[in-house]
Image (cartoon, rainbow, N blue to C red):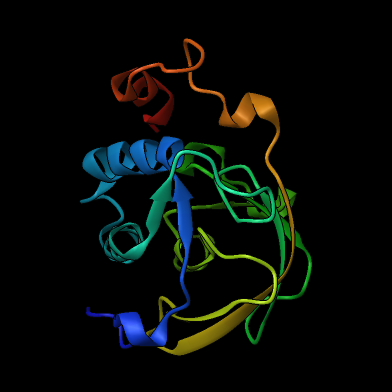
Length: 156
């Protein structure tokens, strides 16, 4: 399935940290076939993102707690996590879901169209972002750890 809104002109500008870009690229390498549709959506977001060494704290990144408005989800805070950490009842949504892939890199005030699992095109708008904890964003092995060192943490 090809996303109906997979053009650069219809999506807002997003930024992703180098650290998240590496971790998410590794995740896609490992999980691409298990979560094919969501992996396609996440790959499209990674390809269009501006990659920066550090992103402002108001940008949605892995581990951020986000409050957003949508026509399919109640407005409540959720935390963006890797698949093995996901627990919707605890408000932790996986990056490998349509909403998770749509949220990465957004800032308050931005909105995006995304395709739900049923094929319907939806829109969400980011209201508020809380930055992730330092322990969530720090690379295993400390600053400058290689991208390969994150693969163990990504296996689900």
